[in-house]
Amino acid sequence: MSKPKLVPLEFDTEAEERSFWEIHDSSDYVDWKQATPVSFPNLKPSTKTISLRLPETLLERIKIEANKQDMPYQSLIKAWLFEDVVRHRT
Image (cartoon, rainbow, N blue to C red; front, side):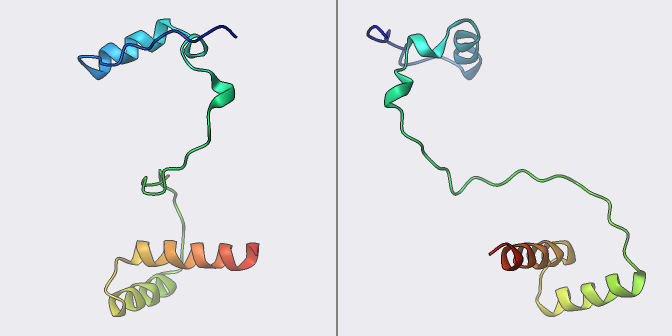
């Protein structure tokens, strides 16, 4: 690859930058062979809404437990599911 082109360092708006990258190939501006992986640990993971049918008595017991822990019952269910998946995956 030849020397990468210089990227315009500042765009007036995000839309202007988006338009630029829609018509330019990033491989002309970045030597991807020298790129290093990064992580963004503080990003909020995306969620997906699901429908889950539970017996009313089970849901009431979960709500009581969530109330004891001073947290929303949906958050408690997510925490329990996460803990169970981690425990069974290792």
